[in-house]
Amino acid sequence: MLVSICIATFKRQEYLANLLDKISTQNISKDIEVNVAVVDNDSSGSGREVVEKFLLNNPGYKIVYEIELQRGIPFTRNRAVSLVSKNTDFVVFIDDDEYPEENWLTGLLKTQKLKDADVVSGPAFPIFINKPASWIHKGKYFVRPHYSKLQTGDSLYYLYMATNNVLIKYSRLMSLEGPFDENLGLSGSDDSDLAYRLNEMGCKMYWTNEAVVWEWIPDQRANLTWILQRAYRFANSNWFLSPNKNMVTRLKIIIGGLGRIAVGAILFFPSLLCSLIGRFDYCVTVMRIIVRGVGMIAGAIGYSYEEYKHFYTHQ
Image (cartoon, rainbow, N blue to C red; front, top):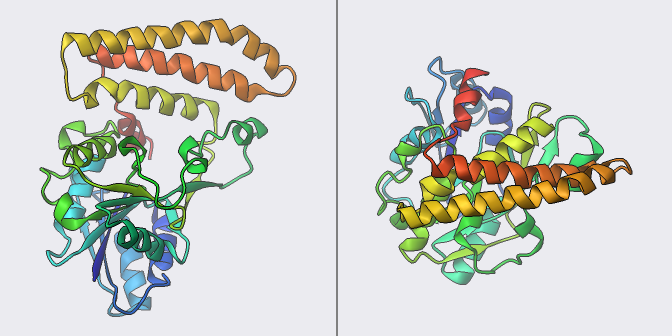
């Protein structure tokens, strides 16, 4: 069995080095062959030295490295997929700022075999570089709600699939154009679009709690501004990911956005009172409801928020 791991990277050399080390020490059976494709979206090739050093310490390990000059995650991920061997059985995606536990691949493959799955996804838990404010822990803004609801082998709602920890059957992935939609460029919504199209194909999607990865959270993300921007971006993508871009859909999204703003406005003052007794997370949750409403409306009238444009600019 051949498993190909695809990694898109951009100026995260320390994280990338740790990720490759953790991949190379996976607890897997001898009949599983692992290849790795690393595609660097930094034109200067800042990740090359990391890969070369890894190969010096792990001679013979099957890893390829290339640079993608077109900036944007879908371009980089598509380049990585293009490097995958045609003999691949499963493609696995993981982000460059994460690292897996030692039974990660085994957990993904175990659930795939158990359910004859086309797609298997698992959790990515946060690990903070520095201790964050208490309200961040209380609000659980970096832990998705479905993590605590799903058990291994449960069917997976397609919007819960994320390319920070997912296994996809190679034949299914390659039947899609792209497979990542490059029109989404710097918006950061290409994984949601991929999940939608896999679901439309009738892919069998399942969850596993036995394939855990950990995501580094730096100070630049462990703050109110980033948390609200991320909520805005998710909501902003509703229109652009909608399969039916017509006036009815546009009005539904606008009405939904206005409803969220109204609910948030009603709850905002009580949430401020809660913040006085140490529950600022309540206030943040209400603010997220409001900015989601704003993001939905902005998307519906044609404004696309390119989150990763700021990412590339400030690196």
